[in-house]
Amino acid sequence: MPLIASHRGGSHLWPENTRLAFSETAKLDVDLVEFDVHQTRDSKLVVHHDALIDRMTDGKGAIADLSYDELMRHIVIGSGGETIPTLAETIDIFGPSAVDLRLEIKTRVDGKPYEGMESRIVDELLATDMLTRTMVTSFALSRLEAFAAALDERGLNVGELLGFIFLCSPQTVAQIGWRGVIAALGKSGIREIALRADLIDAAVLDLLRRDGVTVHGWAAHTSEAAKAMFRFGVASFTTDRPDLAIAAKRG
Image (cartoon, rainbow, N blue to C red; front, side, top):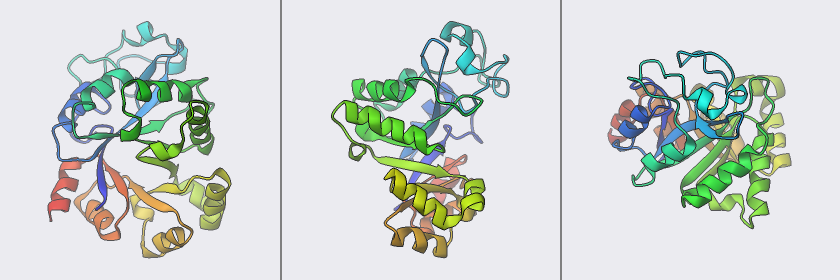
């Protein structure tokens, strides 16, 4: 049975990636919460989708250019006065719950990595006993490789995780084709992929599964899309409407 991940805490129900959204998601009959991690100028791990704070807060600028204290001066729009949460605060919400983590490693505005961020994420997950309750994802294979290296430095491997997933965009598929995608996965050693829901069909699933690749989904935001994820039997999928996905699961 596919696992349901509340995308950014259910961003069509509550302000995305907020304590409110996460607290409400923790009460739902979902398996995972999906969220995004960036790093401030002074190396604080924070949960926010964009590399810039312009869209979702009353401020402007890149997270990478702001100290944590500077970031905390800005309020998330529509949140009732909340600031951007830290990774630690997010873990505090879900640690006592039955909802596990689907964590996306983000990059700077220019696509470059945050220095040392993967190691800091590993340490945070280890310190809170959440490593084995976490799927780690990224659109950048290099960030997944950096995360694997950070685990290896601590005598661990990606097998400790719930999942280790390359997020494959439609643009990537258009540029290099399915064979190119499979080759890139083979080169990196990553055997899990997440595709946008509307790219998933029986032929694509057969192609990837024949190569030993586990398929996940993302952006299954409607009842019809969620039902398709259950019909195709993907490993997990994200949705902005976890309530619709729960209803689809119950049939």
